[in-house]
Image (tube, rainbow, N blue to C red; front, side, top):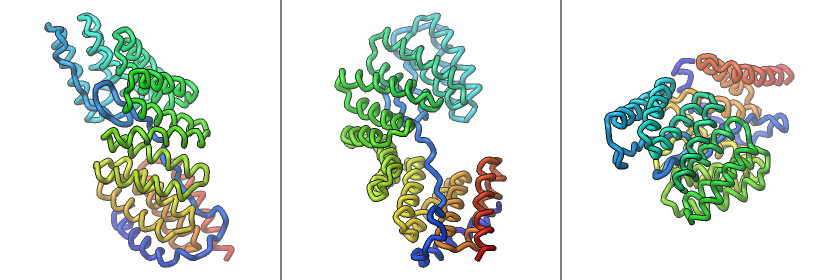
Length: 368
């Protein structure tokens, strides 16, 4: 789909704002897209991070010196550069070499950190079994060193990978152990992290009331942690759970708070989540005009960031609102544009779903 087609979407969104009172043509006409599964927050020992994105803090001054140690540190750095460039295969290869050298020189601190990075890279490559193995080794090293912080964050990393691999019960066990250790050493930030991750595990298992409980408890801790990125993530998780149990007003407030935090900290991922969630919550309340105003922000952000996948979400949500308000001509146009963009992105599964939505719209047009 070309850019000129996309540029017309905002105009159409503004046009529909005045038509928000039109009755939906079918009870479930509004097509919504669930927020992508939120990655649980991962914070390797000694630094603040969220999700599986990490910066490399290489421990260069732990008392172990020598040529092999220097070579291992170099390999760790080169792997980090490759990761930031998106070359995970090269990152993994360098980190595996670094692990061999750290083992030979007996640097268990650097070894544990490298297993953390390796586990994350494997997970992002979809190699969940290898990721689990690396992260279990990381936790084992932390236990041997009686490194409680390393255990907490290693267990949260491990739980994250297990959750991505859809092993919800094992993820819950890992997060619960992390929470126990965090409470035993009175680490409130790590306690908030572990509770937030337990909320994700509960939601993944369909236990949304439990997810609300865990995320609400996490917010009591995270609001005072000075980590707006983590707090925004938890607020979005809480809002997702509220929406899952059909509490759109509560979800709306939580998404608004998350969006404000994300905008203040430049957290693009949580801005997308907040904007999508607000669009869906307003739509659930029948406030289609407000939903479209939020969706304009989502589209503007995705175009600014040149994120075509998020542009696709804007198109589909907008088409769903047009469909729900009975504006079938615009719904049809937007679905056609979304189908073209899904094809350009190579997302055949999404394209098939959109074709089905378009077929419904065409059927309704011919029936009227």
